[in-house]
Image (cartoon, rainbow, N blue to C red; front, side, top):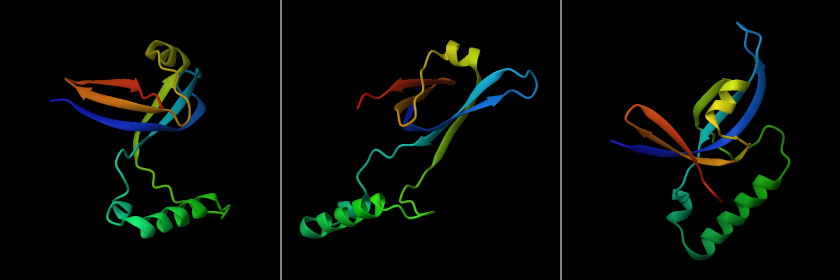
Length: 113
């Protein structure tokens, strides 16, 4: 059975492996929701337009500690620089990937925007 999900690169951090001292990266992937907002889907017309406008205004305001983003951590990779090269994927923040789980393996496919 195959299962696929979508993830977005949320953060990439540098680290040094505590055992070997070799440099590496921590790559944090969060689940990317691929469906419409259920709240907006149940409303139509003028009400939906008003809700979208209010949401966009709230997102743009610089309110410390306030975020409308709900992150669902999915996968965190701790890779040495050599492992990053062997993986062959150039992860960049905000890039979206489709992940396929099949027969004990995980495959990453970059989603073009």
